[in-house]
Each structure stands twice: as structure tokens, then as C-alpha cells.
Image (cartoon, rainbow over all chains, first blue to last red; front, side):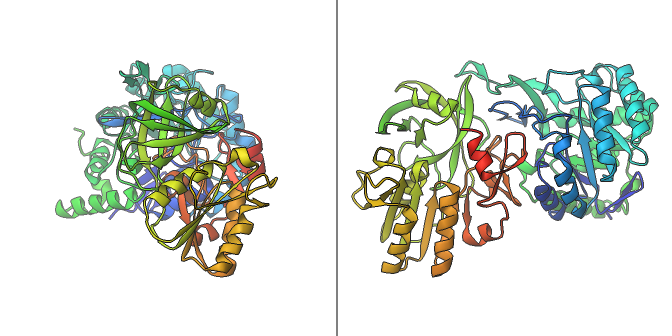
Length: 300
Length: 260
């Protein structure tokens, strides 16, 4: 019922571990694969080693989480060992990358090629670092970046991850398509802030952060819907999905795959199995045999 | 699960345990298991995981001045406020007829555990030197110091082996420097005694989603910090590796040498 094909990649279900969630080590990515994820995305790989922000890096609010990890990571030059171990990953592996310049992205893509990840996601939308260009702020910059990266990725599909912190999702999505994107991921977290009124301070040390969880879901559904209309590209719908019904909603908006992140907090590490089970049950009750039958069903 | 949201709470009392360590009593009640931890927020400074010293009445934590953040903690005064979220993680089991082996700032969660059980238990504590020991007002505490300034001269693990030979306990609980805990595990294995150990790793979220504290396949803040011997035997990183703040796999020597 749930097996899906995405850009020629076969997945046992459409649920993808979202980048930045637990994807720091090969062991834990493989554990997530074994716990029911259809595919897993690594934590974003950057051009140089980076320690990330000082704590607090995360805070919960009534209907979501706000985080500003600040892209901690060892940098691609220290990733060879991890990539080697990830050859044993039992499900398709998506690599996520970020950089401050186009050349950063190109360098990392060149490094990744020999490890043949199933796809390369472009993190052009992390709200939690100030240095470097904010690529996704401007459609033309985004188009140029995607086009340059695509020239070097060979047969590996490239998936830009869109930000909701933009004035027009359709323009941004269309710029990615023009640049040669094979698919889109919508969306990254939305920029936000939480203040503790007793402390009279933003809780996060970085002050602002990215909103995820249930509060992000309607924003994500809208962005997926608009990206689907604007481009017709395959989409990974990410943002606040915690139940099977949420995942079905994302698929009806136009997503082919569904990203799972904060749900691992709300529902535990068994979230993939729980959500997949709920999707199957809903499909049975509604006489739907295949997800393709409902992809984009909310359009028209 | 506890909300991942710090609640500001007042410091009621501060007790000096030795020149480096203080116990802070907070104006907060919390239902927690010994071995669980809380995230303590110092607005404007940092947020750190800390094991719970006691939650029988008011929440208590015991802090050692080591890095910039924990030094800031030990500078706090009664009446100041700090943020608390938790409790998080899995604590110790409660098996009577046990031996507890603590080293340095690993002692507080074991004290917490000992106060939550009655019955037959033996407490062992190791430290570099006499003025690094804590909770020595407890009469049944057996101690070992590297320089012999108090108790047995040598490792606390020497005491453990002697105590096991005297009378085999049903389980050994340990918390402290990881290489000490590796030694505790070796001894327990040799004598066929069960064991649980509490691990320390750099943490960010404390709620099992950021991946900063991963050790082998285990997420220390969620699956631990307390692990059983069976789990630790299967963990290739126990006693060997820890992730740096940048998620680079370091040897324990590099990990403890390069940061607080």
C-alpha cells in the first residue's frame, strides 16, 4: 500500500527522516532506518567544521518547538568515515548540504559523488546562521545556485529545500525548477522567537530560531500546495506532520514523500511505524490502494 | 514527557560540599527517578544537563565548578533564579543489596538513589584527594583517594573488588569518569554481578531529537543516561568515543582534554 517510487528511488513507505533530526551519526541513521523510515536524511554537511550555537538550542511552546542548533557538523572533509559506514544504510540515504558560497556547495557535491547518496538536498533555508548568503531569499540567486550544483551532481538528483521565510513560494519554487532541480523539499522551519517572561529574555541563546511541529503544519501544507501548482515537480512535504492523517493531508497538497522531524519528539522513536500504520488504516477505510491515487488530490 | 520549556525558579539554599562543589536547593517540586537529569538554564549564559541530587522534597542539584558555565553556576546566590526543564532520560533500577561506586561529580545521582531505597547497600567514592570528596558526612561511605589523604590509597575500583569478594551484591550502580566505569564493568563481569552506569555526553536538546549525545546506537538523553551492562557491552563507543560539539567522533581522551 505504502511502497513508493520517487525520482526512480524505491521506498518501502513515503516517510523520510528530515534533515537535522538525529542525523549526526551513521549508527543513529541506521537505527532510524530500522525503526521504519522509508528513507533517511543526514544532518546538513557544511564546508568547514562548525560547533553550532551555545545552549539553549531548543525550547517547546504550546504547539511546536523552536530550535537554533546553528548547523553543528564536522565539515565535509571529516565526513569520509561516516559516509563509508553509511554504505550499510538499509534504506535510501539523502545527503543534505549547506554552504556560504556557490563554490562551497559545489565542493561538497564533488566530495559526495563517490558515495552515491540517493539524492542531495540543498539546505538553502536554515534560519539559524547569519554568515554567508541567504540563498533562498532571492529567486534568481537560488536559480543560479541550483543550476551550478546540478552541473556537478551527475546522475544524483538535487532537491532544494524551500524556506517559508520568503515573500513568494511560487517564485522560489519556479526558480528551483528553472535551475534544474529534480524535486523540492517544502519546507524548512519558519523563523520565530520565544521569550521567557520571568527571565525577560528570549530562551534561545541565538534569540531567534526555527519553528517546527504542529504550528508549522498549515504553513507547510500551503507551501507544498503552491509549489505543486507552480512547478509540477515531485515534492517532499515537510513541516509538523505527526499523524497518519497529517501525512495524507501533505500528500493531497501535492507531496510524494513526507518529511518527519519533530514527530519523533511528540510520538517517540517509533513515530515512523505509528504514522505508517495510521496511513494504511485511513487508506483501507477510504478504499485507496495507492498513494499515487491521492497525490495532489486537493488541487483542481 | 516533561515539556521542553524552562521554568524559572528561585534558589532557596546553597550548601558548600567542598571547595569546588555546591548543592543548590530550588523552590520547585519535581516527580523524578534517581538517575534522571534536568536541563538547567542560566539566562544569558548557557544551559546544561545536570543529574538530580534529590527530588524527595525540593529539587536539588549538585554542581562542580569546571567550565565557564558551571563556574557561573557556583557563583549564584540564594534568591537568584534559574531555569529548569525536565526530568529527562531513564534512571536507575531499584535493586536492594547493591554497591554504589561514584567518582567525583558522579556521586549525586547515587546519593539520590541510596536515599530512595532502604535495605542493604554499600557506598564507595573515589576522588583525587581528600578535599575533592563530597557527602562525607554519610557514615557508611567508604572512600579511596589517589594520594591516600583519605581512605584507601588507590582506585575506588580496588575497594569494589574487595567488597564483592566479601559479599557478592545483586547489582552495582556506578556514575563517574567513564574509564572508572569501564573498570567497574570489567570487575562486575568477572564476578558475575549485574551493573548499571550513568553516561555523560555533550547534550543540546535533552529530548532525543538533535543527535548531539549519540553513543553507538544509543541516544544518551533518551535511552539513558543510565544503561545496563548488557547495553554497554554491545555499545562500541562506551569507554572509547564521544561526539564533539561539532558531532565529530573523538576518543574519550580528546573529548575530555579539549573541553571543560
